[in-house]
Length: 147
Image 1 (tube, rainbow, N blue to C red):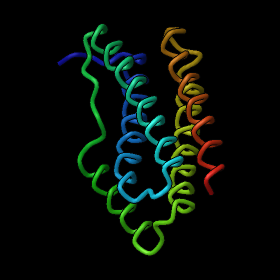
Image 2: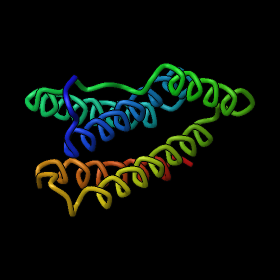
Image 3: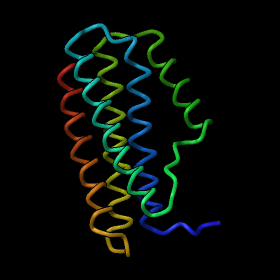
């Protein structure tokens, strides 16, 4: 069994976070009614997937496999989203959910950055965290414009 390095550990966490962001928005898409909001979310999904692919490639180059969240985490996320949208599936409410997700992504990425920045983790890996923070901050501002 291969020992996981601090860098791989951090990158795997970032990968899980961006895949969760992408998966969550994909699940909301069929409830979105406004074309402008749908276009904004499609752009976000594309951004998440591009970052995830770069993280996956970087992990592979290190000899690690990118892993998504386990099935139970995904299931609970889906159940929570279904409950959140059961009584209110307006674009404004969906935008609020997206904003909350982006806020969580920002917080998680900042925590990872702080936990690993004074370790043996490379500047390239830390740059992924900073990029994700900026991406999520942008996503948060976009979501707020639809609330």
